[in-house]
Length: 512
Image: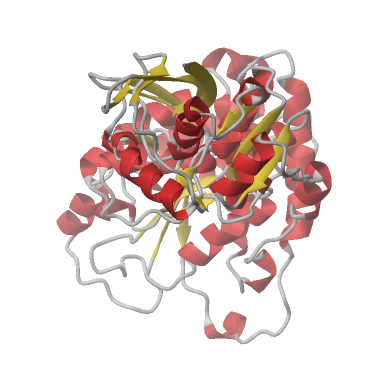
């Protein structure tokens, strides 16, 4: 007897249908073929125990299971449920007439209960595309999959529920999620707000410009000056996620297993802050069992690198290509994967090894050579991709003691959204370009060309501060964003002057 039922394999952030063919014949052996990994092969023992506990016998005939297509590696324990149903189907314990209408996935415990899986959202999207009537999966993942419309999603707790459903003894209730209502209700939940930041108006302004134009930013300042706190406030002023961006972000977190129990769409932009001991693979993705890295988990959000010079040099260098292409392609002998990685890079660092260079009250004990060596830990090509460089000085006691709150994130966010709307209109006919930070040289000549007075100012600044040639394009991009925040069609000298002030690290005499 031969029957077929359907599961799915996740590759990158997309899913592929896996056809599970089960055949029984005379004999006593069990064969599982179709490129399964160790976790899939171990399913035999889990299935035997789960069936016994729930009153079903594992068949004593020869069972051959093929997982097609055979050239895709099947990984993980999420095939337990369809394999168990297939084995029961060939013995006649489960009716098989409805198998072809449902996609089935789930990991079995020894008592027959179901454990959560990774990648439920991309699998649900694939199930809808392939025309399946329903998707049966563990209850913990049901809300995550139910954001996909035109698909019945059934969350189950035990294998007996699924067996009774196919035998017509039980009706399963589909999980229903009001995606839009939940999404828009959760868009303004932020743990940090700029109203709680005392002083630092120039840094707040720099972060506002970075948010408005999608610019990468680095903050240089003494320990305790507020770098980390302000970086954590940045998501609260970024424009809200669109439904399409949210779906893509949720898919990445689903594949990585980072979504919590009973969670649905991610409604706020992600904020990732990896420790400086992170490896290259953890940063960009890949590994033995391929997973998205930190740069992909920060897609459509913020990647914050605290104490930037402490990161391994090779880890920082692998960021260069994703910062330009906004994607990462991981090529290995056995696979090639493509993960999205469009994020805003926010970095912070001390100005010197002791941390007190240029401090207003504390004395720096580092020599000029030590300061320069410390700054040189960050390569020129990486620094080239950071548009805004801002210096932070500690907040004086008078500011800290003030009871009056600063400007709220909500007020700043309104200005950022208006600036982003101007950019969306400007780049409407240019696919892949959504903000000023993504402008090419040709677009700079078209949209960010200052007048004669502005060009004279820029020339004077480059000569006086010994700014490098790479600073030229960055200044124009940032000045275009400042003009957008100002609601100005033209780039005025005051916009250029502010943009020039954000190039601290490019000044040759900065480190003495």
